[in-house]
Amino acid sequence: MMPSSSQSILRTSAWRPLLRIVLTLLAMLAVAIRPAMAQSILRDAETEALFQDMMDPLLVAAGLQPGQVRVHLLGDPSINAFVAGSQDVYVFAGLIEAADTAEEVQGVLAHELGHVIGGHAIRVNDGAKTATGISLLSLLLGAAAIAAGAGEAGMGVMMAGQQAALGKFLAFSRVQESTADAAGAQYLSKAGISGRGSLAFFKKLQNLEFRYAVKQDDDQAYGRTHPMSGDRIQTLREVYVIDPAWAKPADPAIEKRFQRIKAKLSGFMTDPDRTLRKFPETNTSIPARYARAYAWHRSAYPQKALAEVDALLKTDPSDPYFLELEGQVLLESGRPKEAIPALRKAVTISRSQPLISATLGHALIATEDPANFAEAEEVLKTAVALDNQNPFAWYQLGIVYANKGDQARAALASAERYTLQGGQASLALRNAELAMQGLSQGTPDWIRAQDISLVARAEVERERKRR
Image (tube, one colour):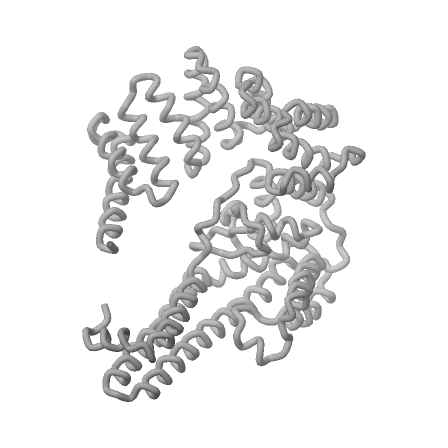
């Protein structure tokens, strides 16, 4: 809260615009240091499997265990990626669309892993605290100076403070980016992956800078969170071209899978008409059929979508992701019973991949046939055991429990779901407490409900204090 003497300042029309500018700068700084967690995460079994297979060699090169860092896909068209928390990398859909090869994406993953190993997602908070501290201090000093009658001097202090704060944060960020570049190059080298893709992607970023007329001189670099792309390319080229892996061919299996994923993502996110123009029916490649299947499905032409899926299955009848797509199209077209055989086969082949299992559970429930609910419970319990971060699977499992009359576990499943969805702390608390009332005290389910209750109650209290 601002001191009472500053209220007269806000009523002074001469200073109000300047104060608004300062407050806007503060807001911009806050946005700059906050991870973009508001984006929607896209869950797809095939994409997540590919990301992990692309990341695991880099993890081993960095001295970590396979699977220790997870890669998440965000449904945003921006060309971006970032690290949040300590062991989570987020890649934007726009980056996948912009990349021409899997090696380009691996170059980005290696860079982001450099942030993980460097602890930048944690340490950035320290840099942000320093920058914010300068901002707040200058704001208070400036307000005091204006209140004392030294208006111009006060505004000078405030504006200089904001510039110093922003400059300190940007410098802090640029150092981290350069460190991550160097670390990423080391991980690619140790993993035996060429740096060609990394350089190619930085060249794409540089072309964007040229397109938007971003000046490439040192003065402009001062106001940036990242080093200039041209400087990064020059520095990294000197490292990559002498590396033994520079001329090594790309992994053909990874590249083939990447082109499938890229086409699938295009079909899922891009306007269907645009997708069908990009992948005309004369193109009978697997990526093209994949993209068209999604485009036709989104356009409400299930038979055309299924025709593309049938063609895909002729190339490989045991591909779990082709089978999953067949089941998805049938299920979402109101034919859940017909979807079950394909999804069952996909679950068996993929060894109970949790996302596919969740879809099978959904199809079994959607038949509204009580005879299918026991199987639905089994596959959904397996799904959440292997991946408890899927709110949809918890929702479906709650339906199964409610149908059985097990209201306590139905409430616990709902509590799990609301905990994952974010911003639903009050509903998570209500359901967790309801579950505790119906569960035997001390059992694993009761303890889990208690844990959710404690966390949700603390979040509800924090929200109450913010108001």
